Amino acid sequence: MPEAVKSFDRLVWGGQDPGMVWIAPAVERGDFPAVGDEQASLAAFLDFHRDTLLLKCSGLNGEQLASRPLPSTTLSLLGLVRHLAENERWWFRRRFDQNAELGDLYCSEEHPDGDFDLGDAAGAEADFATYAREVELARATAAGRSLDEEFPGRGGTLNLRWVYLHMFEEYARHNGHADLLREAIDGATGE
Image (cartoon, rainbow, N blue to C red; front, side, top):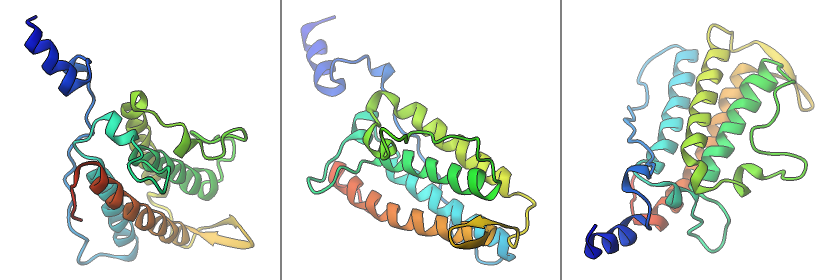
């Protein structure tokens, strides 16, 4: 390989084989649903927020996703994906479905913030696959279940409707973080 090509590869790909660099896939995000029953509307709004997170990551490689571009925080886009995978698992399967034997994905007693702190570029593709799997399992858990179905919660009883509303809160807050992180990484802005 000519030296000029090798130099270009080191500059663009950091010395890695360009075929080996994983890039977060493009996402087609629809509009908010205009009409629907309560359950269908809640599910569609949550999917909109899920897609917004993935949209903020779209087109970035593992290094960019794992980067912490804002000096005032240790947040990264990859950390947000990992954190929201934990939340999908925690609220839909562990709490609502009362599947307590499921462990945490990334957090432990030793690393209570492992979702944010332990993500790295090399694991980005696997972390995105885990996120997608947890979203699908959350959807499957909620499918056909009543929004009024209850489960024991902090200080009282919660229901599936509460889980949807809480997940909106999680995604809304963290998608705001994702906006700032993405702009700091490559200047991309927008919804």
